[in-house]
Length: 132
Length: 132
DNA sequence: TCGTATATTGTTATAATATAACGTTATGTA
DNA sequence: TACATAACGTTATATTATAACAATATACGA
Image (cartoon, rainbow over all chains, first blue to last red; front, side):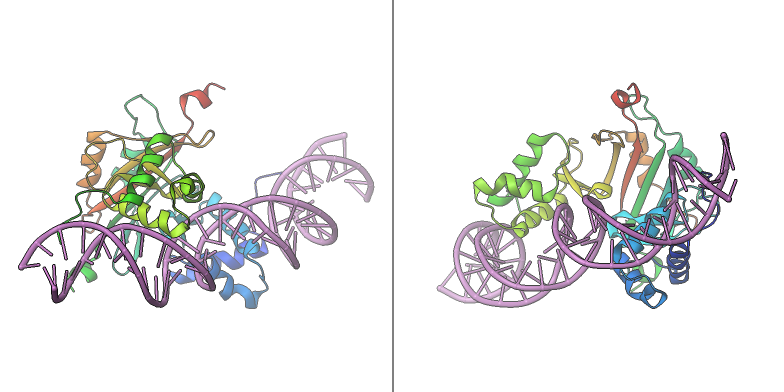
């Protein structure tokens, strides 16, 4: 069987909802909002999310257990991600910085080991919150 | 009241258990193992973990919902952490690389924003698993 | 177009992770 | 001593995620 070319019904529904949000969403919040579209159970949402994360359409913000649509057309696969997270308003932005991604993709630890994947989360105050 | 100088009873119990493990532990696994020492409820463990994370004695591996003792004497506060995670055997190692930490601590995003804190998780295969 | 493998779906139940809310006890220090 | 903060203990509950099973859909080679 060939690598999946098109998204399935549930995958489309979940992706569209997450893309509309412009901010990370919790799995159960997604569930409540797509129930009108026929997805009834957590697993239907989690399975769609798993697939979408796998193919890079969605990223998981691990420290928040939340999911956000990928804004980076380069993210064919979700294997190199970096986010900035405001600890006050919880705004999350995907960082798209080629120097950073090159640096991390080529990073070797002290033993010379390289990695196929990474996730980086920066925390601080966004501009709005800093000026309050 | 002064900043806490010594660990409380529960904090000591939890820290000792996590330090002995040499690998990340799940909160409920910690709970089961410290029950003989008097900690009966999840909250007692989570509260101790929260404090220990706050003061940098323990780090949370966000992608695994697990907790590991800090091996890095520099980690006075847990505000700049990097880990390597083997996706096969789940071995986790704290990365102690001054170039990396300098690079990330000084990182500015495209808008010139700096961050007070970060967590980086690298994924790959450890040497043992690569050679299988 | 049949057979086979894989992906996806639907469903119920349950596991695993984490916090709310309450009152009490301990500790530091003015 | 009085006050503030930190830690404790306890019960209940919220939140996040997966197991297990059966059915349906899709891709593709023979």
